[in-house]
Image 1 (cartoon, rainbow, N blue to C red):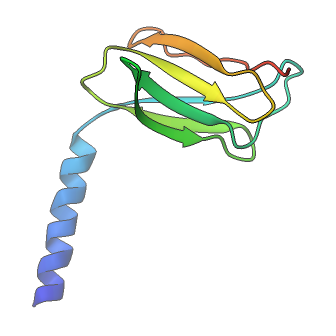
Image 2 (tube, rainbow, N blue to C red):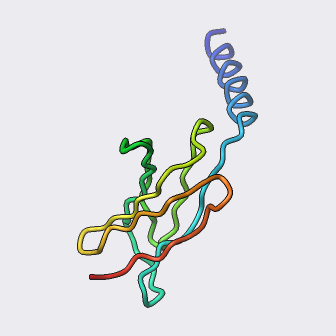
Length: 102
């Protein structure tokens, strides 16, 4: 009976989570030559505080959820050996950026 109850609670929570839509920024991180960059840290920064982050995969792809409360924020891209890149984002101008090599 406990197992059925836990599964039922998980199904309800899963449905509630799906109904709570969040903005997601998706993109690819490339160098100036168009090559995908693996393991780039992509971090949301708001008022000089780190809100959340992710890492680009083997294809340079990243996906990051933006909290509903943020209207304006920065995305910070960093990788050892590369120049850090920050871009200012509003809900209207989500976009990809290229990171330059040193």
